[in-house]
Length: 190
Image (cartoon, helix red, strand yellow):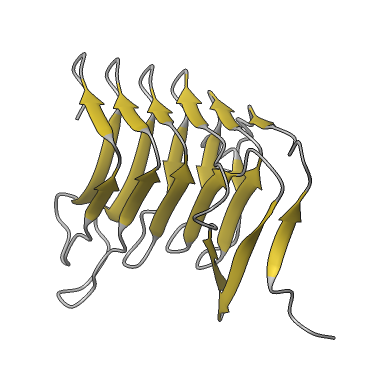
């Protein structure tokens, strides 16, 4: 058996809508979750998280899509997958709304990548990476949060992109990397 080299999409890739707010055994809302250190990827046409939670503690979350026929490259590194999008193919949009959260924070590691035409993070939604409270060590470093939009990125209505080392914690935060034609941060967003 060979490892696939990519994800192939037809003329009209279908949208993905995630509204998961599933709870774990402690009653904490985790939504759609993978085992710590693994990758959770939502890739299709437009990707919408409406009040949803995605959790990949110390792992990787990839969000993105194509708007037309094309192949998204797939790279495997242990338990983590990363994707590459063809420059010549139009990308679809990514929307996080109504308090949607993507959380990869842990004692270290944990990265988020969003690749699309437009990225809208609105309505108290957020991308969260970093070292969680009471965890970590001096030499632990969180992964990066990378947003790559061929058009615009909007962060509105008390939404956030964070890569933090929380209180009572040791370690280093990762970077927040943003590439877009325009960036709009407004309405108490950070």
